[in-house]
Image 1 (cartoon, rainbow, N blue to C red):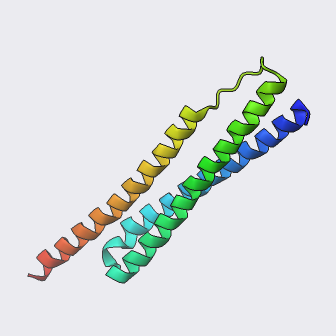
Image 2 (spheres, rainbow, N blue to C red; image 1 turned 90 degrees about the horizontal axis):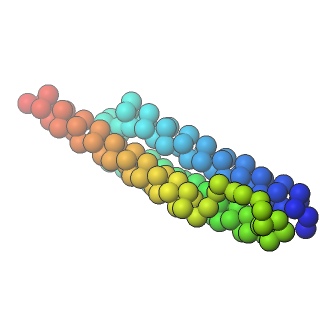
Image 3 (spheres, rainbow, N blue to C red; image 1 turned 90 degrees about the vertical axis):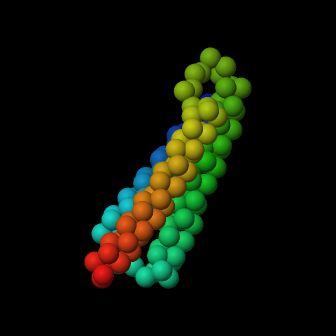
Length: 129
């Protein structure tokens, strides 16, 4: 392939990775809003279903983003073989860092739901006395 075709593919992977990240942030935001608004009112089974769906979906987004990033690194290496002078700011460290941040964000969202549920149940117990 020509350098132009490889750069076009690289850009397509970059756009796909951005789509994964955008979808991830949408899911995290929706989960945080749901936790804040109705988290304390949910039954245990409703919380398990919502949290399970959130965990699976956000994990898939992280996995998709990371996998797409790995493909971008492959494309970068192919482009550099054709044109060694071409510089890229993207590498394995930024990819690992951004994926790690996404995992931490998912864990923070889960902890937020846990805190809302605990506070809501302790608040109801105090109010019922």
